[in-house]
Image (cartoon, rainbow, N blue to C red; front, side, top):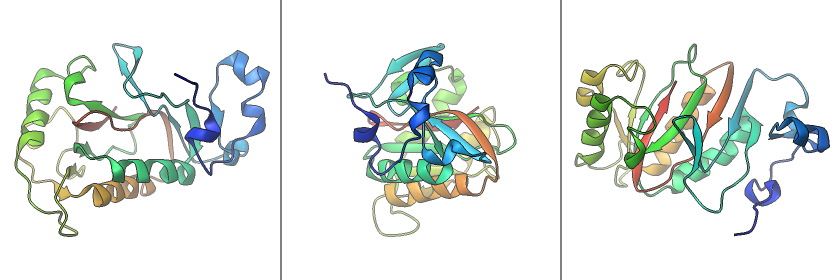
Length: 206
């Protein structure tokens, strides 16, 4: 399978040239969008097709796209369209802006190996399996269940995960809610984000 270049993977993203020179390669640092050539309050490293399982990178989609660091507008430009086109079911938890450093998707089959507690796995799987009606914003089928921090403050709160109503949203409005949550966080340095894979899963933060 051929290598996917940054230009192929991230159409419209202008990449800072010195983030792809020999010195960057030697240090093993990811390519960066051009906006990171100056200080930013917000940046995230996107590793689209990889899940870290017990500390090791596991490819979850092919062809695997390269890692890249992005400012928030560039990140949202990549992420929103991808989330909106994902056909599977999603349970997503709004991150704590003061605590989170990673925000990533875990497919249902990877819950335990990715480090989620057994009770948490069971509660999320139960919510993924529930019947859903129409999106609260439109008439399309609801594919997302979004939990604000007011409803589920941490993944340790298994009772809230099992009982909180959440927002039932279609993929398009789920993607909008996800991106709006990131916009509302004034500063962040996110070390790892990925994109959905498989038939269903959850967006969690640590």
